[in-house]
Structure formats: structure tokens, C-alpha cells
Image (cartoon, rainbow, N blue to C red):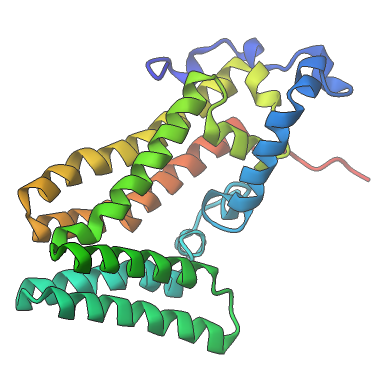
Length: 260
């Protein structure tokens, strides 16, 4: 599935069937439930991540930072985990490390509420930090602070894998509706393979996190687990956003707007 080069197909295979030039093809109308689900994914993507950069003709550092949630969003995503790791490494006190991490997440959330800015990301982060801290306190094991992240990555991996197996690549569904293409991309071999490739790459990220981090968990190596969690978090996510943008721009080149 991923061994094929998306650009290896003859140019004429990229052209959509004649049915695309008029109304929606019967096959597309029959896929209405899938269309509705894809629109939900696209609506969520519009507010963050790929949705913020997919249509941009150029990608600047500022655009990428914005797609990652801005400077504040980056701080909310990185600092609680970093504070936990540093505090635990130097003090070996689980309670103090959890208090420091959870306290910082609370500060971020309160700051959002006071400033009346979008608090969703901060609240989601606070819930995640609190749930992880509660689990670690219950078991008394610092490495359990990372267990919920394993389940989250596994859930994403399973969802993406299922989408590939049923031949509706999840990233393709999102990109198709972001770019105003609906599900027509499935009838163009080059575009379909590009969306397969993107979906497999995103699957690889979630699987790689588990493959690298789970052994550190069972070895009880909190320092290595925390460090790889940070490195394979925002930095790896940013790299995949850039790669996804490059593929989307290759598949959906800029079109000149028709004269009015």
C-alpha cells in the first residue's frame, strides 16, 4: 500500500471521471454517512493542526507555530511534562513532581479563563495531567504518569489502521473536505495513494511512540520515558504537519481563481 510512489502514475490517471464535472457521482451520494463523518473530522481539523495550514501556499515558522497552538499552546503542551520530569529526576519525590506539573497546568487554565481566550486546549491538558497524576499517586509509581498516553496513542493507531483497512484513509477524509474536494479524491489514483501514504505516516507516529516508550515503562526508566515522551510529542508532531503540508500542496496545487 505504501510502497507505490504517488507520482508514478500516468498524468491522465489523475483526471477525475466525467461524472465529477457535473453533479456528484452516484457512488459519492451513496457515501453520505461517510461524508458526514468526514465533515466532522474536517470541522475539528479547521480549529487546529493541519486545518490551519492545509490551504496556505507557503508555510512560515509563524504558520507552523500557529498550527501547533501558538506560543501559549506550545507551553501548555510541553511545560507540565517537562516540569514533572525535571522535578522527579532531581528530587525523586513523586508527590512533589506531580504537584509541580499539575499546578502548572492549573495556572495555564486559569490564565486562559482570566484572559477570556479559548480555554479548550488548556482544559484538555489539565484533565490529562490530573488523570495521569491520580493514577501515579494511586499506584505510587512515577512511570504510571505516562500510562494514559499509551492508551491514547493506541486508540489513535487503531482508528487510523481501521480506516486504511476499509480503504477510507482517515487523513484523506480530513484533507478532502478541508480542500473542498469531498470524497472525489478516492476516484483519482494518484491522490488516493497520496492520502494512503499520509495516513500510514501518521499511523507510524503513534505506533513509534508505543514501540519506543513502552519498553522504558516496563523497565521502570522514568527519565528515558519522560525524555522520549517529550521528544516524540510536539517536535515529531510538527515534523508530520510539515510533511503533510508538502504532500497536500503537491496533490492540490494552487488554482487560479476564475475571473468574475
